[in-house]
Length: 166
Image 1: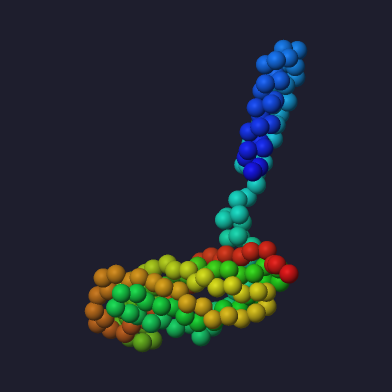
Image 2 (image 1 turned 90 degrees about the horizontal axis):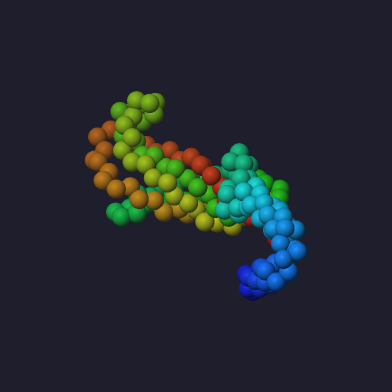
């Protein structure tokens, strides 16, 4: 509906500029100013998908009881997430999970071989100050046979959040 109104207004504006030659110069200046302002607005305004990734800092979210279940085709990372933000609803947690083959159970990860890595997203809605369970699906393709100790790590790489709705 807004687009149709915009097209009608542009059409009327163009018609007037062609029918009244005395307004062409002023009309051109006004049109250039409007296009410049619109261009600035489009370039300066942060689109919603990028903005939702910056609303909550990673340190404001806590994961606990995180478990990894390796399946035949897919794997699942599950646990609990606490939203420490005061103003935003957490709507997604982006995660990176790495799998390691280590010489021993207490080996430093720098001494281990990385045998798998995948990124996943847990889609979960958590209001400020609340806790929810989450699950993220992962794909680890071509995992080799483990010759040492199997270990894994997870890291929160990003968060999605929306304005708090009352």
